[in-house]
Length: 345
Ligand code: NAD
Image (cartoon, rainbow, N blue to C red; front, top):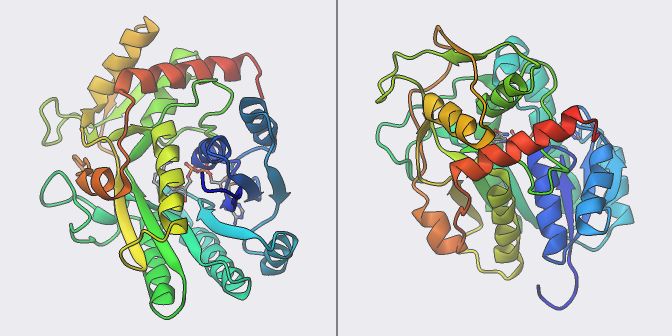
């Protein structure tokens, strides 16, 4: 850490990836201010972060669509070095049903944030993007140069439009942006004090696995086994959420040390390794010692066959590399699920 402790605003900081990133930022010596409207998280996470790091971050329960409230936070913290912007709605299926809800929340939030950052002369932003911008890529692994495909869902489209808004603003202002394109974050902090908190039926495989293992669900639904993959199930690049969180710290450091090569940079964040749904279930069974029920059902709308990242750019330029393997990811997710059952929150 450079001499003075730097202060970073983390939007969506009580959420899954935001909470893990706040822990890593604080442990790297940053001060963190969280803004979150708790639409998909709980303020108990602030205390959990405090328990892990020895210091609770500043927390404001504010909706980013409320520009005046956001401005007030920037006034109270005139010394912000940068912003990491996680806050967004992220349920792909729901976005198909309720497109306006997604366009409104994800885009108005971003526009308000950029407006207030500009007024406050805060010029550094790390943005949460997604591998969904690549759709089903023509070649694997996916590099940052792979073409952006038409989005499969309004959610995916909000990520594409957000990247375009950021590029447009950065072109004509002092704004610097690092857009991190996540592959599939899973797992939980090793303390098992924070983790993914799906509300309702999980959209993602790993919460589905752990909720089945703990007895909340009768079986795992495997959506299709007739894909063009070795075992017929979809292949994804699963990355440990703590590895992902660490990449945000490195990205923020890169900005603050003025090491960026251009005003907007993009990095794929994955392990570079593809894992099928059945391989993921097997890995979970191995670390938990449990046998899980699963049922093969029909394909789910909008799922691509296979995708994994080329991580050479992040490895080289960011000097970051994912370290945790699939079994560590599964074990940490399982410990978190058990803690949830024990009433940790
Ligand atoms: P999450 O839902 O756990 O966290 C997002 C947080 O943002 C929540 O705490 C929610 O309450 C908050 N929020 C939403 N709208 C808000 C608003 N208008 N004002 C204030 N707070 C608001 O999700 P996550 O998994 O931590 O994802 C974080 C970011 O990463 C999102 O932008 C998501 O699209 C992106 N992303 C996630 C994944 C994934 O698989 N989890 C993959 C790719 C990209």
